[in-house]
Length: 355
Image (cartoon, rainbow, N blue to C red; front, side, top):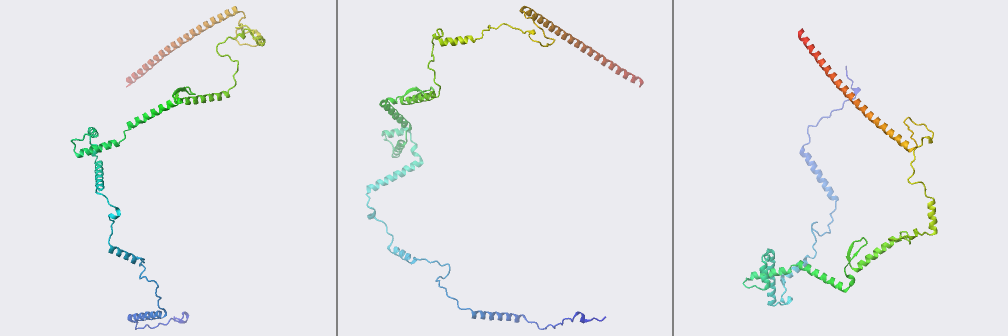
């Protein structure tokens, strides 16, 4: 079958490849030439750069104003030399004053060294007493100095016992002066509002008394008024024997209202016939006569005693019967156990004979 090329289109034409490709050296030359041409065009269009107005050589340079003046002043001082104050400026000091000052400074320095070492505390009390009395013969200069130093230290301390005694003496003297000068300042004993014994001046006692009286008056103000005809202590009321007309009428009125029934009242008993009512089987109507009533009460008490005795005897008989029943029951149980044992043994004997 023959193929028809017109149905699918004509195939593309194949171009013949060149047999002489461009070398690498020619490509490098072309690129270098194009770069030179572009630089020449840019340099021709760009103008000259504007010079900077700043006089600084770089950004790190810092201005130092007045450096030349300071350098000139330093050179002037070096030329003149260092100047010190002389005797004319501070005045003149004599040799005695200078020697005394040196001696005091040396003594202070030695004292400071001794204080740091603690040597001034090593002395005895006898040595201190001798030094105080002025007996310094036969001692070296160092011992005399240490004794004098300890004496100064002792004099510098505070005697608190003597200080307290002086204050107490001053206080007592002041108190005596106030007591002599003012009688009102004397110490007296008084009782306060609670009944306690206090010690104080007369003014304090008067003030406490005034306060207690004011409190009593305030308390009395709120209480009801007391009657004026109260009787205090022992007294004989003669008006009870010789009353006036008003009192006699009141007494007669009270006597008329008084209950005149006998005291103690008469004995009364229950009257069974006083009312109609149904009574139980145990009801017993006592007589109104006292003797008959007493006899009936005695008969009832005797009957009660007999009933109690019969009840106790019956209780004892019942307990005896119960005891006998228990004994009989125990005997029957024992016989029953024996009978069961005999039957069991008899059964065992029959088994042995058969075997």
